[in-house]
Image 1: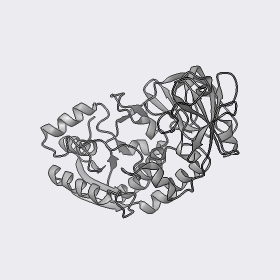
Image 2: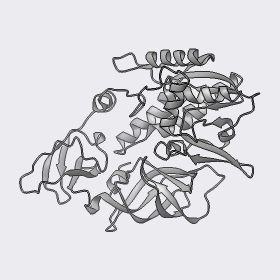
Image 3: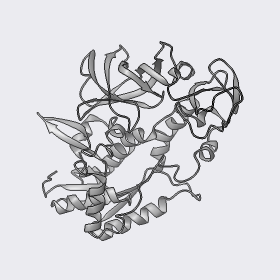
Image 4: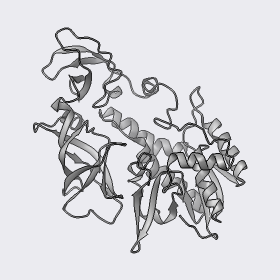
Length: 377
């Protein structure tokens, strides 16, 4: 990408290699570059790495030779992201807080703060692209489809697209690390962060128990046979195989067990054997109100591609909009482990159209596989 040298660009600096290379590339293109590090979670415990991340960001900016600002958005994060995260788990669903963080914090409060500092625009180390076509700005997938992060960016406000840059959009992760190494950045080999940002390296169950009481119950098959005990429905997601604690069960074949559904009313985790069980596959789904990056949906009904989870291949589908702004989505072929609370993100080629929260799914036999989750919401 090219950028006019008279632009002041404030880059979100995390301390990792992606944001460091994003800042370096803009600096080499002649932009007036500054860094801004934000703290979104500042609990003082053995797992919180906010202080270390800030020191890493300071080191990065010193190496590159740009000033660094710091801002604490912990209060905003708890109100706009974490509160909804907990509410979704209470409803028996599986949320994705990274989507809300991008919408409300990184490309909301962060952008507003950077503009007040005098920025013309902001940049981050996301693997995605923003292009202008016929006067309209569009969000595109990153060129490296293995790292593409448009799924997590689909809910940002359309009006902010002209104010953001993704310098890594045309690059692959190995290319980014190689650039960092060539430019002498000390963090060129730093491992990527994984999981939910505010949980860090702590065990997920241990973290969630601090906020939501666990309610153990039974694991049952679809026909009600008792298989074992679960530790709390909120700790499981549809399609989950690991961590069920089910060994050999007398009277059942030696095949892996999967989470097939959650029955909140009875506090029962429904499990099934074999990845091909119809309970795990859906032929359709509905979403809550869809956020479109264009001014409106492409039409009342249309064909496109959809992802129902990150790193999933695009799935061809037919979309019909309803009066509430939600979508009824019919897949061209069955899709595995479509999960209420996650996001359905729609695409036309490389263009990200927008997306919405998955509300219910319809199984391959016509039954609503996840209706118990939606009805309890």
